[in-house]
Image (tube, rainbow, N blue to C red; front, side):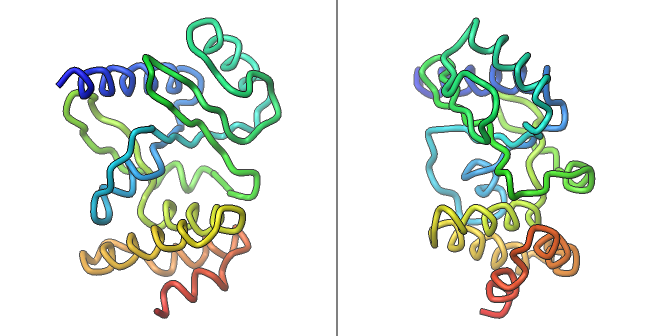
Length: 182
């Protein structure tokens, strides 16, 4: 019970801190995936935000590093690990992923007990992100992407046209077509 409270407390703090600098953030990773496919356990919390604005990123790092551990603690990276109350929080924006206004507008708001309302990527955008990440991280991300597609299509909650357009914009359309065809 104490671990759950500690985790949710860290989750609330992470949301507050990230939202302060990146109101257009979204939850990604397994936590978001669990809303669209069979749940898997996760001990970290993953967020995406547009880290391309170097000045805003520098302000964020300066603020966070005065309260929590952050690695790396300088500007110019696409992934930051923040330790909040012993919980690992990742803030990412892969350089090859287009986190644009359309992706932001399609976020979904979910309510997490003990945490509150938070935005997660749409299933199409989360799958696209997994496919982009699979180029560097491997087949595990493609398996996660396929799971989301299967469960979302079964619920009639997956816009294939939008998905394929985003895949094309992110230069991964061939991989996305393969996932849809299997």
